[in-house]
Length: 361
Image (tube, rainbow, N blue to C red; front, top):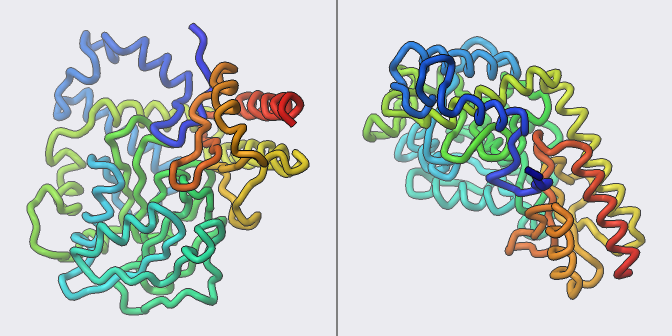
């Protein structure tokens, strides 16, 4: 079997070692005689798996005391709505920093439940740079400040943590969680869809400060209340057991790689390799994103002549380089360099780009 190099923005590449282990355990997990997908989530075997996965995530991210880890369902988009339901009352407002498509969507989904204030936006810059901090208009009475540390479509990333003062900072880390160390104590709530750096789609990992769990929010069914999920160890209803299992294997793989310090260095090197190839192409390739705002995870780029786009995609796919087509909102190309994408895959891509330039330049 020959596996291609997968640069998909999500669902994205998983570590090959994780996939091979899951394959070997598919029919008989942990000596139980059954697949992990066939076991009761309330049985002692799965409960031990769940506890192990949480412990590994806490170690990887150095989650301090006073925070609860949840393994939820629905995708990050569902939690665009669920977060205001849990963290704010009916008459409350929250601040949003909008730096791309997902920030825009977070505002839209929150708006039925509270006043979602756009405290800063880079829309005028076509989301190709981050809004200057002196333009942010933050409300110290806001229920929370929400931002998207990395925008997968536009390829912009915050390289520091914004100062929210006494307002809880909420971060949609779907596309850069576990890609480098982060000070969890700076945040009130971190959430991430699993399908980029954690595991398969359908799982959401959340790290929430305990005082925020105690907020009343608004009247809602128990299934939507984070405090209820916390009280039931994320098993208020039947969880995504397969996703939880693969997340645990990925956390174990990350520990084996040296943890987040090592992954941060690796990811910085991969991104530098690709950006150097783009910037050094003599204009054949271009990065539209402001240099200071460039993402390490998602690298959009264009060809000097868009008429070559179809040939680039056809030839790259034939060379075993998958999912390089840019999002329809911005066009061009995009290479996503998540944790499971090795340096060698980036080297292969860069060599292909140079060869394509020689043949079509």
